[in-house]
Length: 265
Image 1: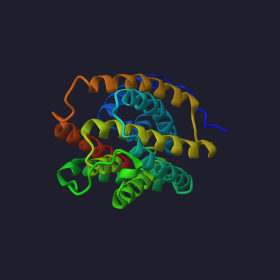
Image 2: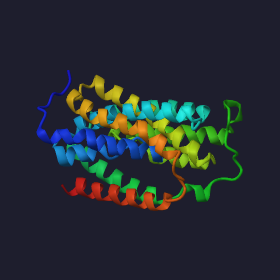
Image 3: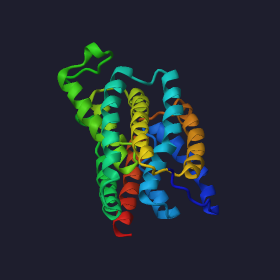
């Protein structure tokens, strides 16, 4: 049985918020889910567990549209996405179960700590420390053992935080893809597909636990889908490497500020 909320006037900002985050996230290799839960909790007074489930549901259109657009432009390494996403799916279901079985206050504080840690990790650029001994795999037969374990471990981690906090798990996914030495274009597209699978798994877990609000999902997800449709198109018109460092630091600062607010709210 889903959680039903009265649609307040302020909720009509949600499509615009979803649109902006959907467009930006599909241009940097994610789905923007790390922004949705704190926004819903802090500015719309949504219950944390409902906010997590809503976030995962809202980013499904971003992942679906974004993955298709990147696939059409040959921006996805399917073997890597399959192994990464399979591990993430398992982790996301486990994360949803854990989220439902811990105290709400603990969940909020832990989420705040996670955002701060994610902000610090975002400042770290793994491309500068890649292992030159591992060429990027182009097919399943090309996987080296350490590459496979890298994808499985980081995939599980990404899925776990997706199901637990309603976020995308983008940071460990991007770190792993850069360590595989994929080009930036393939890193972005492949990451969008992987975190889409994570969102599906996490939302499925929360759906069966009855922690959904259909109105919030529709309002946030509709704007996010339109933004996700435009993101990959905009990516082809810009040089993604040009302002990468500046964008990374801005995102890191926003994440850490949101994390501190959640901890001390």
